[in-house]
Amino acid sequence: MSGDVASPPFRILPRITDLNRPFWTGGEHGELRFLRCRDCGTRLHPPVPVCHVDHSRNVHPEAVSGRATVATFTINHQMWMPGPELPYVVAIVEIEEDPTIRLTTNIVGCEPGDVYIGMPVEVVFERQPDGDGAVWLPLFRPRREAEVG
Ligand SMILES: [Zn+2]
Image (cartoon, rainbow, N blue to C red; front, side, top):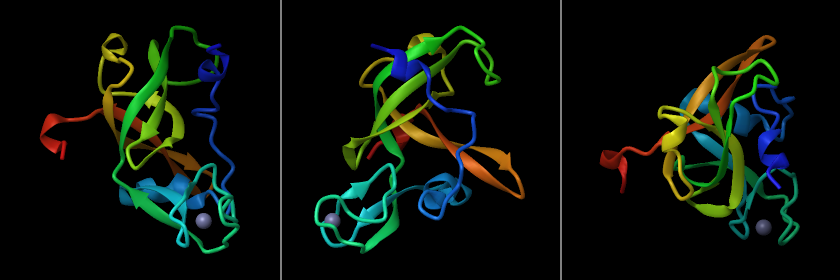
């Protein structure tokens, strides 16, 4: 079923909480951040205050490389909500440091027809005004060869 892939809450801005703020505002510093348990090293996403492995509360935001791999994707040709120009790619990517962490996102910076499963990508942030502040949506673009390694 691709239904869960085609209906992400993207471009609908997230409600910022103390827990998810590092994730949604890390882009201000060019960082993709996840909460990580400092006792066992598990990354926690969606963010939770207590590690689900060892129940530790020693949980803090930590930046990852921003590199990821396309796990699955769909090309959207329908204007079903205000969003980017059509067509665009809605993808699920697995982050390099922990492939069990999957983000629903958009692939930008290439033709939709050039996207493939297993494609190496890297994060790029799209700033969106949000009330008095802003959030930085993590989108992904094809990884540049020169930046690999
Ligand atoms: Zn833990």
